[in-house]
Length: 150
Image (cartoon, rainbow, N blue to C red; front, top):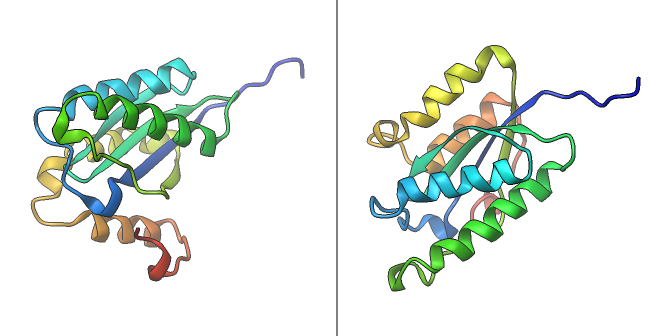
């Protein structure tokens, strides 16, 4: 086969360091757009980017030319540098070290997109930590609670 053809949707999520509520209304939508631009620039086209004050969710098509850890590294590095340039209130902005990434079948893309879009309402009743534990359980990811949070 002369071509490499792929279509891998991935749902990526990670928090701010120590889940600090630093993604405020003044920066939220611009940050989502910026992260979408990072994904686009490395051919991992965003379907939905959203989150809450202390974390981010990204649903994108993973490029055939980049591996997942590199995509997350690029997103974190460039967005962290960018947000720090947006004012003194963001100078101590950092992402957590780890991340979660989950494969999404094409038949679930709309559902996950809507889930990410509704993060503000979702987090009126659930913390990011509870949400993340639920994702890990849903996808059967074994973990040690002592090493999940920074």
